[in-house]
Image (cartoon, rainbow, N blue to C red; front, top):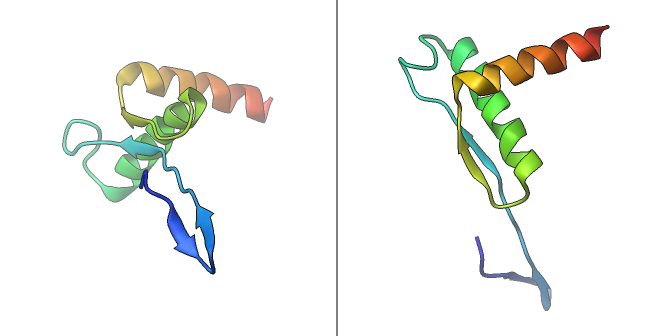
Length: 72
C-alpha cells in the first residue's frame, strides 16, 4: 500500500490503519471480537496512519471510559 496507484494519470496514495483481535483470548464470538477490533482500530487511528495495533486489556479500559463520557 505504500506505492501509489495510478488512476487516470494521477498518483493516488492510500494508507490504512489496522486493529487486530485474537480468538479466544480477546473474545469467543464475532460480536466480542468485533468490539475488540474496533477498540484496537481506534487506538491505531489515534497513533496516525499506517499503524497496526493489537487489542489489549488496557484498550478496553480506555474504551469503557470513552463510552461513559460519550453517553453522559
